[in-house]
Every structure is written in C-alpha cells, then in structure tokens.
Length: 332
Image (spheres, rainbow, N blue to C red):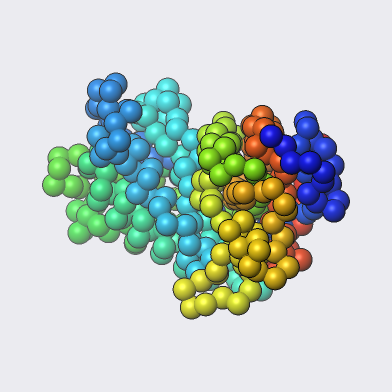
C-alpha cells in the first residue's frame, strides 16, 4: 500500500509513483568491456544448480566480477549480458564483463590505465584463466568508435605461458595469445583490449513500505538491466548507499541518515514516515544513451510494485562526481 501524502519536497509523478526531482550524480570512469567464452558441457538441469562450478561460464562471471571496490581505490566489475554461441567469435556461449576504474582529468590517461590494467590482469589470471575449468577464451568487446585507447595483454597475462605462449591470428583476423595449460585446453586471450571513458556510479534509491517487497522489486529491476546493452549493475540490489564523508580507514560508512532502523535515533534522519526499506541500484554505463535506457527500464519495473512509494537518486552536491544528470530528463 502506498503511503499517504508526499515524501519528497520536490517531485513529479511517474506511473503512479513519486519521483524526487533531483540530479543523478555520477563520475567519469575508465572501463574495459570483454567477452569470455567457455565450454559449458553441462546438462540442462545444471544451469539451475546452486553449485556455480557446474556451469563454467557462470563460475567465470561470478568469480571475475566479485568484490566491487572503486570506493577503496581499486576497481569494480559486473556482468553485462550472456551471449549465445551464434554471436561469439569462436561459436561458444559467452558472457560480457565490464571492468571499471575511476578516472581523473588532472592525471594522464596513460598513468591511470597502467594501474587499472594491472588490477584487471590479476582478475583475468586468477579468476578466468585459473578457475574456469580450463576452457576459457577472452576477446575484446568494445567497439573501436567508442574507445580512447588500448592495452597490450602480453606482458601481464600472455607471459603465463612461461615462454611457450605464442601469438596467432584467429577468429577472422583477431590477434590471439595462446597460453598452454596442463588441462589440455589452451587459454586464449586477444592481445589488444580497447578501453573507454564512461559514466560510473549513477545510483537510484528506492523507497518502500516493505523490506521484502523492496528486495524483490530491486532484484527484478536488476534482471531487466541484462537487456540493456552497455551497462552493468556492479552491486545488484544494494542494501545501502555510502556516506560521502567521515571515511574510516576501511572505506565509506553506511549512509545512516537513510537507515530506517535509525529513523528515531539519528538527528535529522531523512527516512520518510512509513518507509521501511531504502535500496540502491548503482549503474555504470558506456554512454548517456545506455544510462538513460537503463534508468527507464529499471524504473518501469519498480513502479509495478505497490510497496514502492518513491524513487530518488544519489546526490551529494558534487562531492561524488562532476556529472549531474536530472532524473526527470532521464525518465521523460
């Protein structure tokens, strides 16, 4: 049931739900977009198995994108979409993965990409090459027209062959590094991966009268984003946003002004009366068009749930990032 009255000072109505008239605050981000394929070789029942190891492609996706951590100066990642075999270079099922790193305009791109690529290379070596069952291949999946540069994968990944790696042209002219493995399957990675500068950290806040319904609504919204090309949700249905100040050494604390359990404890609590849950959905996008579509798609799912009484966006007055995009412009 919707709460009575307005919960935001400035808002507009969208399909029966109150939307706060606020700007979505985001920041520039460096990103890599890759396609990983693998021999699935599983029975249909294994696709639904709780044991991710039964499905090598899902195991890769979850291992290689775990622990988002831009907020502590490293990188974050997410699964964009699964790709059927007829749309991949080697005609095997694949998964598109995005890796993201914060981008600063006062530091050279070359210096930042070196640090970024070192972090990504660790995930490729440990979570794709080593833990995938030994059948994985990794391809560039970023169109050249939206890229700003490239990384050479030979030094930090290719040399895992101990000197026995080799470079060959395969899959319609792609330059691939072949790394021999004990399993009998060789790991293959495209030598040049393109990177771009996109939009990171755009976050929707969902205000609900029910914790369980909020969880369900946000999970379904996140699922819908698998249909939006060019974006990821690195945290999924996130149970809390960050406070952009008073950082302890471990990173940003929970945004306690918006914790329903602290409504009567924290001075100046911003939890509206009747709201029992506030979830966050963070979206990273290759460009403004994919971000706009992602927000529309997710909101169109959220408004179908009666327990969703308001939708807003993370905004910290410019302390998070320089990109300010009005929510009404993205939705309407």
